Length: 275
Image 1 (spheres, rainbow, N blue to C red):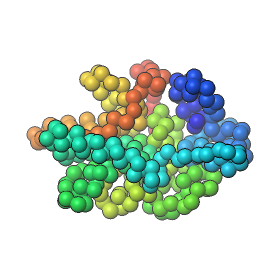
Image 2 (cartoon, one colour):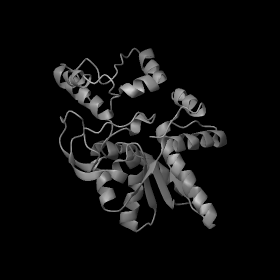
Image 3 (cartoon, rainbow, N blue to C red):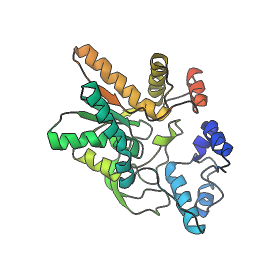
């Protein structure tokens, strides 16, 4: 578990330990690469480092298997069941979205909601705006470059053509741990290159403000990652209201925040800062 999340999200760790898992903070002393990174005791860790450690542990431990859960194209395609279900839900409602929004870290979450609607843009000429929302502290799409790069910090994965901040990029310690990744899935990156999607970067406090608003209105507390999509959905809704036009907006509420209450406590106490 990435070091910063290990400490910021203790309830997630506790839940895994309840099911008899052993959770290590990454960078750890359990791998050669982790030990090399720990030469800087202040390193907060990153998804790239954790992936490197997971790969090393897998190839050096007999009988161990490792399934990457994001970034890779087959994962993005698997996740599209989300968007396919959303399209069926829209049919039941007798509507079609003008805007589709998803948070974007490694890309699979966003691809899951967006790719079926991108298909409709390509096949049927739909004009739906599709927005990928990332944290301002880790602006892969809005400030990264499209080039070949490694998916992990130790440079052990195959090279991938993607928007990237560099495999050695160390993201700030924001609470949206699932979005602290240096690169973007190759398929999402290609869609960006073709102009099929548009990126937006949201600051941490704005995401938590949107989360609190959503919880008070809808009764559901969203995860910090999902809250980035909510912040942009609210912004687009207010813009449509000001312009006096009807907009059908779909966003992906991809997780609850009940295990992120420590982060919400920091936000309400005024201790949560933008980076």
